[in-house]
Amino acid sequence: MSDHETDVCVVGAGPAGALVADRLAKRGHDVLVLDAGPRFDGPDEDRLERMEAFVRSGDWRGVWEMGGERDAYTSEGRDYPLNHARVKGVGGSSLHWHGMVMRLHESDFERHSRDGVGVDWPIGYEDLRPYYAAAERELGVAGAADDPYAAPREEPYPMAAFPPSYSDSLFAPACERLGVDMHSASNARNSEAYDDAPTCVGYGTCKPVCPSRAKYTAERHVAAAEDEGATVVANAPVQRLDTDERGERLVRAVYADDGPEGGGGERTVEADQFVLAAGGVETPRLLLLSADEANPDGLANASGAVGRYFMDHLYAGTGGVLDEPTRQKHVGFNTSECHQFYDDPTAGATGTAASVPASDADCGPLKLEFVNYAGPAPTDVALDGEQWGDDLLAEVRESYGRFVEVGALVGQLPRAENRIALDPDRTDDHGNPVPRVVWNIDDRTRRTLARANQIQEHILAEMGAEVRWQVGPENTGPAFHHMGTTRMGTDPATSVVDAELRAHDHPNLSVVSSSVFPTSGAMNPTLTIAALALRAADTLHDALSR
Image 1 (tube, rainbow, N blue to C red):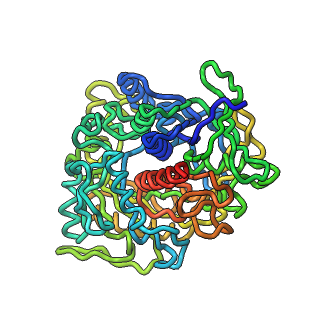
Image 2 (cartoon, rainbow, N blue to C red):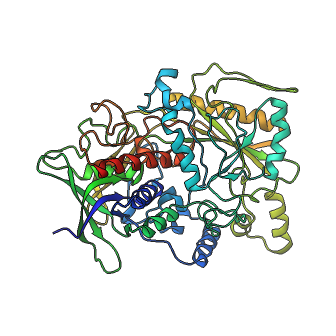
Image 3 (cartoon, rainbow, N blue to C red):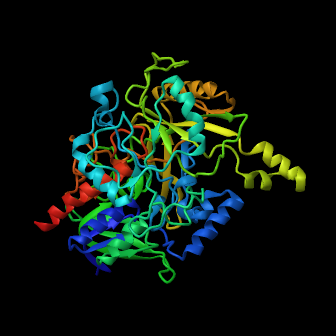
């Protein structure tokens, strides 16, 4: 007998799963959401304590209780520190994300047609355009339509953009002289009270915790879905998905009851429709763990593409010091960016006093970020050193307050050899193979990182900054945006889901995640995830209403 019967079973209570659950519950459907981790819905004092623990330790993982056998993984190729920036719990990684929400460019949907690399998406910008607007309303986005390189919009942002930080005002004159266009950065945090959440008060620890709750987390839509009658089960890691006798339709999800009184025993959910919204790593892992006689290579994997084409965004940054105060760390998020080099990263920029030269390198999209939280925090200086009294004060004054940095996100090409697989030699706390991250960086991505560094160097030189460090092609790291492992496409032989995010192999399985991205672009993915989730909810509603 089933422990639960429902219209829709959603696996994962991050932004995608929460938005789908909320939309469908509002339309009268019975929805049950399973999440592998706990609830973090204590009082506001709990968030303050988590912030204070982070400030003391600097350990992001400990803030949201990541680690141990439950979250074990292995890495092959370039080291990938998976647990450094993911959360298992109601709200998912939105609990500690940075809150940056940009739309993809029109070019991102046509990468192969435009550049001859990667693939084209089976949908275009116009298909997502109304859902982007809806996603901005749902998440509560503060922004301004001052980016001359952005895709066309249909309405203003829900909230006004945050004003430029003090350090942005130091970048601005140099960028103007170079002909580099600065514009506001859109944020899923409140520049004013919005949707019963307060205005940002500037704790500066947005990543990994916002004590004021002014930054969006998926907990908002989880609560809204529950108000409409949805059921959310925490501490419920799904162990496998079962199909019917023909191996076509999904009939149940089997999860471990890891709650305080569950003891890890297995429970089941039967549903008409199943939605996987567990992110770019756990979603393909679950499909592979669910292999059965009819689907020996895993569910939705007739193409062999499940787990493959794993992509991330790579970080490029150049930083240093100025001979004046920069007020670093006064703001914990970006207030200004530059998308001037996104569609054509080789283009130069010519200003009144200097220029950024053009490049003949074959590069992909990149976006520049003007970082106002570069360098060490005063607490880091104090806790890491051995000075006391006046000596400590002198060290803080020397080591803090003059840093600047220009960052960048760079897109990565989809390659089949980059993948999420099952590790045959290591298991988690329930005896299942852990995910193995197989990841390397292609030459085109390295060239794009080098191009980003080149532009950054010109900006800092024009500012008169002394360069102290650089993150580039050889020492880059991921932004922890897991994409591509259940890619969408029109051909069932080369993709996992169709344009409506339905699995080619299973008519009642939808995948709502950045794992469906055919290409990565260079924009933070959460707004696109949210737009796709809202679009998928419409498709599911139509299917359930037949």
